[in-house]
Amino acid sequence: MTKEELALAVIDRLKKEYPNAGCTLDYNEAWKLLVSVRLAAQCTDARVNVVVEKLYEKYPDVNALADADVDDIEAIVRPCGLGRSKARDISACMKVLRDEYGGKVPDDFNALLKLPGVGRKSANLIMGDVFGKPAIVTDTHCIRLVNRIGLVDGIKEPKKVEMALWKLIPPEEGSDFCHRLVYHGRDVCTARTKPHCDWCCLQDICGRVGVE
Image (tube, rainbow, N blue to C red):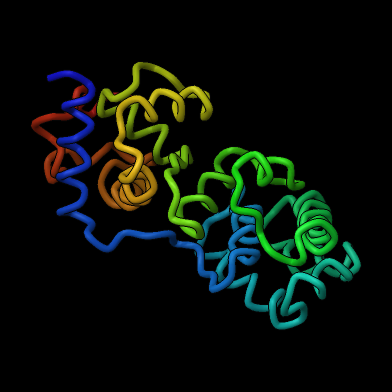
């Protein structure tokens, strides 16, 4: 089986296993997803979803958050870890949205990358989830699983994994595929315990069963 064939088979099986998989960060506006994905660095999505409720209660829109004192933002987001740097990035990002984009999140990948605190993973998440455009989100689950499955060979650098997957994953499948990897990585192909290969829907096609 070629890598291209393997990719299509994995996509098909994960679709059946997790038909409704989506982003696990709660948001109802694009700027809120920008905030949440910055807070999610080295923090669980579940904790971020709790913390942002208080943040949005106090600062309900881009302008309010842009005008907020960084210390006040930090006091709220501290439970997510790295509070100072995250607060600075959120403040700076909201100021750019306010001053350069009329409070809207740009739908251009390169423009997103220029926003404070936004890297390729975050930009891809926004492009796929908010704007419905092709996206490959190489988070820790994605990187671990595509190496274990055999879609990439010993590549751990996020951008290199992303570039490799662009060659294998149909553009319209990328965003949902990466969300399904998150679900599969949490439930079955876990990081902190031995993968549960015995009940994995990919067990007969996985190239590296039970091996990092």
